[in-house]
Image 1 (cartoon, rainbow, N blue to C red):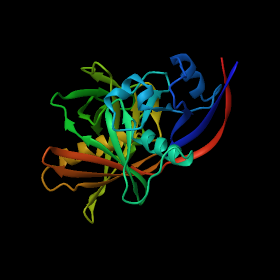
Image 2 (spheres, rainbow, N blue to C red; image 1 turned 90 degrees about the horizontal axis):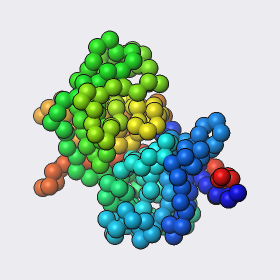
Image 3 (cartoon, helix red, strand yellow; image 1 turned 30 degrees about the vertical axis):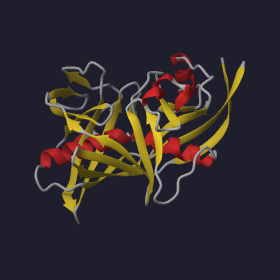
Amino acid sequence: MAMIPFTKGHGTGNDFVIVADPDGTMTLSADQIAALTDRRFGIGADGLLRVVRSTAIDEGTSTPDAEWFMDYRNADGSAAEMCGNGVRVFVKYLLSAGLATLGAGETLRIGTRAGTKAVTLSDNGFEVDLGLWRPEEQEILVRGRGLAVARPGLGVDVGNPHVVVALSSVDELTGLDLTVQPVLDPAPAAGANVEFVVPAEPLVEDGVGTIRMRVFERGVGETLSCGTGVAASALAVRHWAGAGAPDRWNVDVPGGRLGVRVVRTDAGERVLLSGPATLVFSGEISLA
């Protein structure tokens, strides 16, 4: 029975099993990933990050400008395009393992299924450029346990799909039962993460917006945080607020606080996510 070295890490409570496979020699099935991330019989995590060189994985052909590729899998073993918390933890691991360096004013490029992501140091940890974003045109109705009626949701694409729903109060947010997956109508073909948000009072203070959020991640369930979901939520509230809405946001999730900022370019608006990344412990585990 093979023994696999691993490291456990998290970004605002969104936790990951990290497995180094620089040369791409390891094959992990969906069942094996689900076993590794199982919270009772495995290490326990929301997902798995395989650290592999871009030249050693098929998807890496689309990110030749990045030495390292983040092969991110959800807890059920399914592949995901991107993970905003995961990419920060991925970079933290690279730096800790001596596989990369990142100094003040420098950029580290990471390959993902949503393209190359540029990561820099920030006051609260790391900041990742998630790229251009766009709101989807089609309105989606969201039904969730704890909501008396279906609510309209805004589709937001930040490299992976999200549907953001505005709620009226903190009580409504805390009263949601996210042990049950929300129902989307119409259902996106590839599924979507679903975020429920409540604005702070006041919404904007000193030029910075603040909201609270909970999330149900496809392939996982409710998590303490979702980086791309945080970005999508801030963008949705900014979109609803209209002209004059700020470009900087704080988003409070059960696992902590993350920052979002929007940068306007000739090509469109880019969204950047910042927050901490923590490595918790390392060890070895047997893999059947």
